[in-house]
Amino acid sequence: MGTLRKPPVRLAIVGLGRWGKRLVESVQGRCPEIIFTHGVTRTLATAADFATRHRIAMLADFRALLKEPDIDGVVLATPHSQHVGQIRAAAAAGKHVFCEKPIALTLEEAEVAFDAADAAGVHLCVGHSRRFLPAFETMKRRLPEIGPVLQMIGNFSWSALPHSPGGWRSFPSESPAGGMTGLGIHMADAMIGLGLEPRAAMVAIRRSACSSLEDTVTALIDAGPTIGILTTKIGPGRFWRLEVFGTMGSMIWDGEERVIIKRSDGPAEAVGFEPTDIEAAEIEAFGTTICGQAGWPVTRRQALDGISLLEAICQAHDAQTSGTREGSFRRSSRSAGRISKQVS
Image: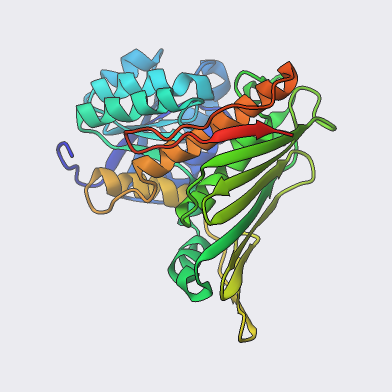
């Protein structure tokens, strides 16, 4: 795909808020194969000291950044609604793109983004960082041990910090369906990565603690022979747990560094892992993808299925507030899905 680059890969950071800085710090000066050389952000003054410390040349705007010939790829840590336009512009300029999730807020927009990257011959890598945890790889590799999967139950919750008042994540237009947009979509991707193929969704949404967003969201997902339950809560602190039940046993992803495997005819086996810097892992993987040394773990179809599920949940929120109770979740003919949604 395009001309293969040899390390070090030169990247530009777009958006130097809290999370953009975290992505830069994860690799800058630590990974010789990756270097952030340029950046652009909405308020230059707030990023000046950080840019100087990390030797990043700040440019006035995104279009100017794309004209820099030495930049191999861009890393987007910008508001969700800006992603598609930025992806299209970067692809047209021949830059590979790493985009924080969600890549878009609708299936059509996500398809446009992938189509633009495909047409330009560049990589579009969606930042679902939990794919880089050893626990996920263990779950995926050992899933056949518990037989065909009948049920998945996942919860990813956090404190209210990322949705603090005044930040763009606190705007309903950027975080429709509340915590599902920024948090639950990580769990949705993990479930899809383990084989869940959604067909229909019923959603319950409540607002109890976060003033501007729905802070408690639960989706019941029909995935053919498998039933999924996906839930997220803003406020209780960091919590990650995915339970998978098969015909011959179960697997529990308990926190990010432990997996418990229990066959119906044997004792439970707990497997622990050392903590992983998943931000460093995904940025390094973006570099190796650009160099053609490896493929990105989230396929186009999986990324689009995740957006389709998110969109169905968001539509369910709108239906709930308008009083209607039915809708549709589609599966694109171009390798994605949209599934019927209902509201509780």
